[in-house]
Length: 229
Image 1: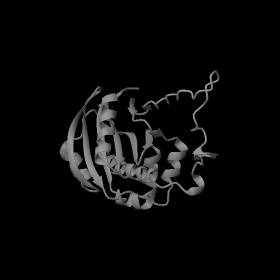
Image 2: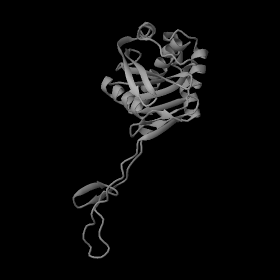
Image 3: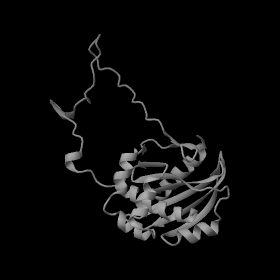
Image 4: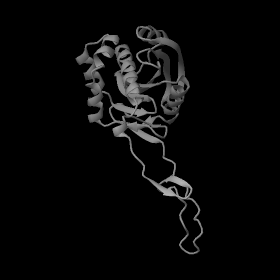
């Protein structure tokens, strides 16, 4: 069951990574109004503000940097942080993605029926998307024993090219991560699935982006910030 989860969720991560990288249609883009000045058009709000007392340009205010996203996976019993710019999807958005027309092809590659694949997608604990990337979390098995490197490589080689398996230190104990390339879209998805043991269950955290370095950075950040929910 655990290894079947691996194959399915790898494909699911690739799906969301592809969706998050789709271009925005012109009618959906946010338009910023412009104003004309003697120096030419400028974006509204970009002109220096005047000080109320002496009429001199006021010092620009420092913009607050967005904080990392804190994610709580209730079913899995874990919490972690994601980089700035990542967003956790609501259940309605997840259901919409699972009903996409291209699900059938991804399900076939995962060796599952379309309906079984959709059910699996909707049962995930967490979905999150970032810049050309996605993350999902699920309870992969009710056991405390991590899958071996050989088991992970054997399962993943059915759908992708395995780059390697490594042990990862986390506050919850040593986890195990497999890194792979999945050619279900262009550019190829560079993914990694991290397995951790907590509370008598194995939790699988799957990350997929279009850049292997970015994928590893997200996985390592999740691993360092792991805690119990």
